[in-house]
Image 1 (cartoon, rainbow over the protein chains, first blue to last red):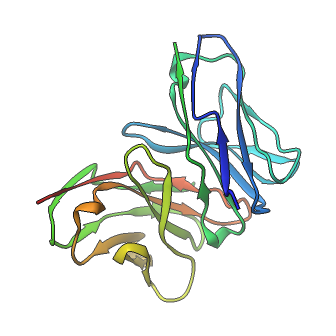
Image 2: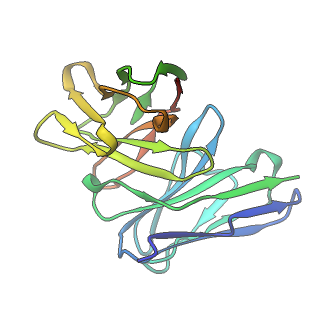
Length: 112
Length: 113
């Protein structure tokens, strides 16, 4: 099993560009989440999903969109990139509430 | 609302010394509690978890944590720290129907010889 796969690993965007961060898991996990990690701020929840077709906002959703058309995939879309979105983004998935989340290796995004 | 507080931003311990990292949480029901570790440039690895039963839980790499409901705490401990334990440690709280997981701001652990 590959676990949680995130692509790309690195990306540089210009202000105003859009892009999609990809996240796929092969563990048949119902729960998936996106986080951003910034120095001194820990991991902040952007959006999460409790199953295919169901998503909701987390702590910092502005500027990001998600969809969950399949159990396996949970892409994160940046609509119009801003320098404030420079961060490391992590995708995670979980089978049950008590099992904890499995994390991908992250995407380092720089917006110039 | 869910929240997690890790009051120590940075801790330095000597190799072989004991370690305790503090974590306080706010959650409206019985929480699921987790500790994750992140080595530089890496993703997050689950150290241990609590969701019911014995309040003292054992994890990987010799770590343990104790859930104290009266203090809303879930502190991480290790009796003897190794140089390879230098990393950032995150406490997280989750649960309920949404299984939303909220993290603290992390504690950076340095280990000196």
